[in-house]
Length: 305
Image (cartoon, rainbow, N blue to C red; front, side, top):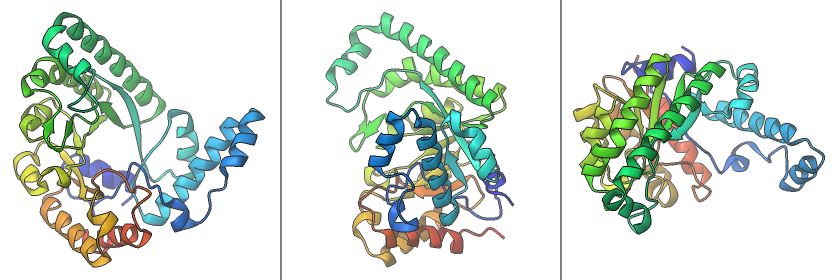
């Protein structure tokens, strides 16, 4: 089974041959596969010579090398590099992107954005419609280029304390426009993936009800229980997550990483519709041995058959 097939079956809430694996970013690549082919200094020189495309292509080839080394099944690809991706990694699933359907506070302290949901409703409603239309056009361009999976619509919409906005504002302004985007993407024959850290529990019903296909990352550091999400929504969405990159991957032992990875698989994989990933990205502070332990555990214990 190809990685692309593995991801697609999971998005259809099915069981592939093994649990697929994915990361948005791995920021410790040089510790795993050696130095990048383009140093920061060389990148500057090449860009000054008008060779920015060469820099992007060489860096992407390096990323693909890493993805193949780790056995990931899906890779984020800029649209202009999709032909290269199809040439050097035809087996992978490709993740494209589109815009958001609403302004979103960057935190609960973003008072200026939050107050608009109380006092600027007419203009905000218009802006959300316009953003949704723009996101649909962006998704259309991605699908026409060859993408089958689109990340977009929303991004981080909650913190550890809960959603950045009162749940009623998601229902009034955000989820109806997210549903428009999801329907449009489905008409194109593609899938919609949404990412958000934070405690989403007060708004999960509306988020899942909008028709998204997949949700990343079921943040355990924000009291998100992947088993609860799986039991309540696993027949409606594909779940991506949720080995804790804030604590476990960063500070704990290899044995603890293995234990948490096995637990995520045991809790979310049965019945399918699950992709193993960290709770955000493999960031620069993650020890390489922990990152590799998670991957190796996924390959060893993620088999369905």
